[in-house]
Amino acid sequence: MLKRVGILLGLISIATSPWTTYDPINPPKLILLGICGMSCLVFLTLNRKKIKLDRFLVILSSIFVFQALISMFFSEGSVTEGFFGHYGRYFGFFTWSMLFVLMLYLSTAEKFEFVIKVFLFVGSISLLYSILQYLGKDPAPWQNDFSPIVGFLGNPNFQSSFLGLFFVSLSGVLVQKYRNITSAVFLLCILSISAFLIVVSGSIQGVFVALIGVLSFILYFFFATRRYKIFWSLTFLCSMSSVLFGAAVIGVGPLVSLLYKGSLVFRGDYWLAAFSMSKANLFTGVGPDQFGTWYRFYRHGASVTRINADVASDSAHSGYLDFAANLGVLSLIVYLIILVYAIIIIGRFIKGQPRIDWTHASLVAVFLGFQAQFLISPNQLGLVIWGWVFLGAIFGYRVVEGFEGSQAFKSKKHNKRSFEEKIPISLTTPLLIGTIAGLVITGPIFYTNMQFRSALTKADAVKLISAANIWPRNEELLNYSANILFVNNLQKLGFDLTTSGLKEFPNSYYLWRQKAAYKYLTDSERREVVEQLHRLDPLNPEWVPKS
Image 1 (tube, one colour):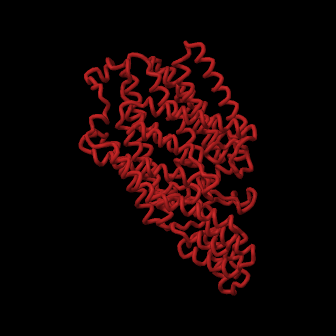
Image 2 (tube, one colour):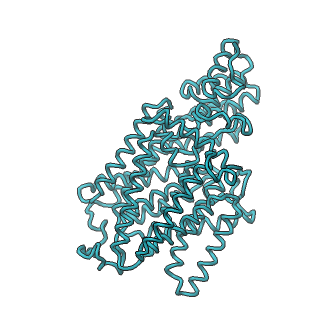
Image 3 (cartoon, helix red, strand yellow):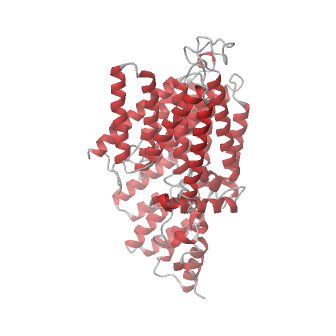
């Protein structure tokens, strides 16, 4: 089962459909996540009496999922969109539930060599693909105005972060293979290529992730060798640096003059809006993946005139703040408790070892590198999946071959048969049921994207409207379709589609703005549209109602 799950995890990272779906990145990843997550859920359910799950971890995960459910039903957003997530992100209730299921499943496994190998293999494929993109030989028709190095994630920032995690993991391999000259030279070459691609991607995120990951190795070494004064001194310096960096992003502190510029200024705007959302919606958040719907309502005045009032975002550009803003503060608290628990588990494990376990050190370094990325970046399925994989691995890691005699585990003599060989229930059953369930739940997203892309290529207004109305509808495709209709002077069709969309998405700024483009609005209708736009974007001077 673990090998099959590992293969699915690898496919989630690299699966794309540039010739099939309108969104070429996320639908195939979501459908594979559904299959993988539901298979693990069925496996855990069928074997619940034979699997010793960490009760505290189960309780925390259950609270998080329940909080996401509360947010989905009791926030003002569409329940359907709350379940699947916003178009282009798909971080709704279902995605978060599957990620926590995967974490729990991996916390029951005994060996993680295969999962690590899968990550390295996927990283190698991604590295080779990035080289092709850098050389201008990418066969896929990506539409990207920035760096061509987008990998299988559709964005140079995400790809840079993924390469950063790959760099960290590969560094762990180098530490274990450095005595073999051939292997060491080969690994150094790959590390150099990875570093080069991170730099030329134009994104600083990969550099940040790689630095944090390498620093984690150093801290691990000092802690494992009982050099606690150096360890705590470095930890304190890193913590203070993080606080000062975070303060600079929102425009305060001594580093403002150095860091408060470029894209970090906009990131600060998004963070401040997330703080406001969280404060105003402590218990439910604004709804799963609904940051973009409410950003304009909660943004501060300076962000309106930074460039122009239309600059917006569908993410807080911080996974931590997205938790608080979208799902409520409780979700963030639960996640932080899980992280603290993981750190405690890490410390206990290290103290129980007679010497450094570099496989465990690699898991920890990648885990912490991901947390660095999660702190400053939006969520992406092919990237975030590994954060939960390595988090589960931290909880589930057992002593690998050569360490059976350690003080922590010397009383537990492991049977040669693997854990899953002791499970009497056929492994085919969870995979079969999970595959069917995953396809049933996530298949409509893929089908909708496929039909919409087909309708666009045929340039048929009727088929376009039909495709935009396929369940589950989303405001992005409705807005795009309405805009095409209005541009082609199909005013009535555009108006009807917009009006229909607003019944399901009454808080959609983009749909109300599309409705404002209708040439034949009556004075009362136009007044209503302006009032709604002012409600959703109160700081925008364009939508101030006339007295």
